[in-house]
Image 1: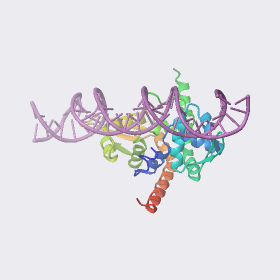
Image 2: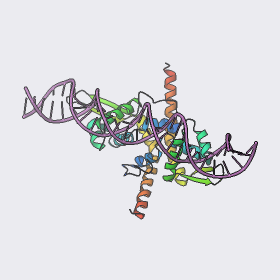
Image 3: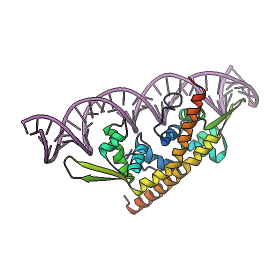
Image 4: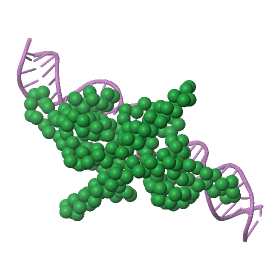
Length: 119
Length: 119
DNA sequence: GCCAATACTTACCAGAAGGTAAGTATTGAA
DNA sequence: TTCAATACTTACCTTCTGGTAAGTATTGGC
């Protein structure tokens, strides 16, 4: 999405926000960086069980291009690269909070329902 | 997604909310129904320029199954089917509002940037 | 008998998203 | 000389998402 079809003309604000946040791991990356402040590539990989290296950098690159995260390279051997949220990334996280709470309530409700109706 | 892989174990609230809202037209359907209260199938189709009939009912069915919308059939000829938001749908819309505002600001910023850097 | 209107339904297809696994580059330590 | 550690990079493949276009069902009007 990043360099290709994004930033297209948006129909509404949700549309514009989704363009930036859609991607299997992006909201989790946002959450990780918000929680830890700064994380190395390998730390993120270990923090997101199941993510492939390919998708992880692809998402990180897109989010950097979208101004959500900052990438800092320390020229050492072995290399060290640190990722952190920009101001835009932090504000996006704030904007996602109510949605996250809604989702948590939904998950709670689903759990209660499936507890009431066991398989 | 609806009857198949959804309602899976969620990693976080965002995850659970995204599961319900991801789909090319879902947030727009939410918006239409929130704006008009009640809409017929054909009205929704005309209100979402570019949507295919297949995706429209597919999304409507999934959202109904997820408890976001209510479907009411009037047994007439030609048939009349009316869709509206449930309480859950309305609360989801509320939860999406900050994200929509964030997206609107982002779109505004992008427009300003591209105006400052013309092709 | 045929067509119009409405709300779907189906089969088929293209493109996007994401996974797997192997390879690259650098340099200090063993 | 070979290996370890880190952060990617690449080729290839599978799965998912969404689009196109045609078909179905019902009944009143012409």
